[in-house]
Length: 305
Image (tube, rainbow, N blue to C red; front, side):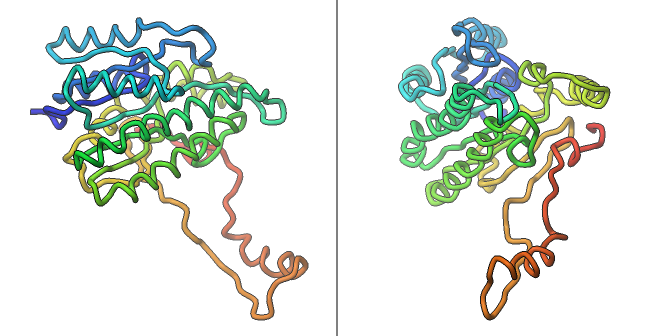
């Protein structure tokens, strides 16, 4: 028996990349799966297609599993509610949501069009809100439910050219934390994963120099979507009942647990502070504890395991 035997799982973005691998593995581990994918381009601008989601659902059925496809958008609450209704009508329940659906519209912040900001926030942050808000009351009422949401080191650490994506993904971190805190009494869990994996989204990142080319090759060869799926499915399982409110990354065969913001240093002045004394005393005393402006590659400079 698999770790999701008898459970019903909704996987968004399930037609390609990480979502596809999550859907396939969830089915192999015993779940009935609603495979959602809008079937749009990486930037979300093209008209969608039901093809990718149905291809994965058909693959699951061909290997003896249970799956249906859905091509609604996570950015529309009505579409998400339709996914939930489809799970209920087809399989009689819903126990977990795995939400890697996403788009990229990269660009330097000082040149970013409003529509690129809005589109990324809608899919990633509004999408995470939609899939959780549409299901949380059901999970609470049944006394069981899990969310596996997706963040990014672009938000946790930072990457140049991804202000919209970083803002949305750090917002997902805050959302997941509160869902976990509020859901604990009802056995509703939420965790997030920052994935390192070669997908069509990563393939859109421009290669401008030898260092970035080498980084891309490392991702192609050593960081796969199916490796991320292993953790996602594990976290979706009721066997992970003690794991909630956590931030993980998957990088090849390496699973990373991130810390979460906590005070690292404080300074006090009995007579109070002025701008001048802050600059003269507080800032120098805290400077050694400042976080540098290094991007993700500076935090993970080594080859994947």
